[in-house]
Image 1 (cartoon, rainbow, N blue to C red):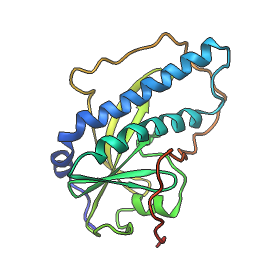
Image 2: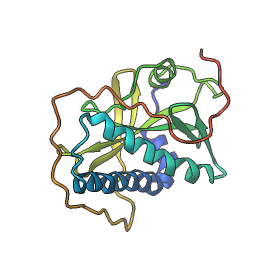
Image 3: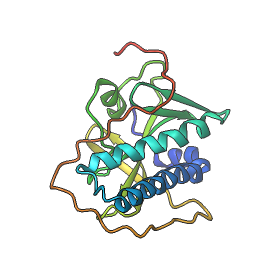
Image 4: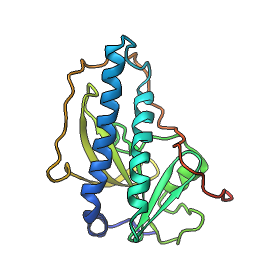
Length: 204
């Protein structure tokens, strides 16, 4: 399968940039409210960075699924632990990104099929373009640093471009002290959104 074209990706996704960025920024703002509540109640910070990633993923899913699902041109694919959006011939997933600017997740069979350039996903045309939307926090996890559209082939980054904040968006910065965490490795996101399950598909 040929490498996805950045120009084609921008053409397909630019009309959705504000929606994508709003969903991610709102999810992050929700987490900051939860973090403030935890701080006020003396609960302390989560021990593992993946806890925050999982919460934000759930908050993104609760927004993205109904909003994209309401679009006639989009199809939302939901499985037990994740969701993807098929629109304009492109399949996208939204993930927290790592230092390599690639989405973080457990290496399941379905995840690997998405990440490999020649990977095949059940029920979709073999020529489907697969792209990641990744969000990156700043070093002290107090705000979203970047949202990127990423093309990958396995563990190799092919190209990327940035989605700026939505037009007219007001990004709230809550007065929360930076979080101190133990030195751990973020092994990726694994969360089951609270939505209806799609019919199971056989794994290839």
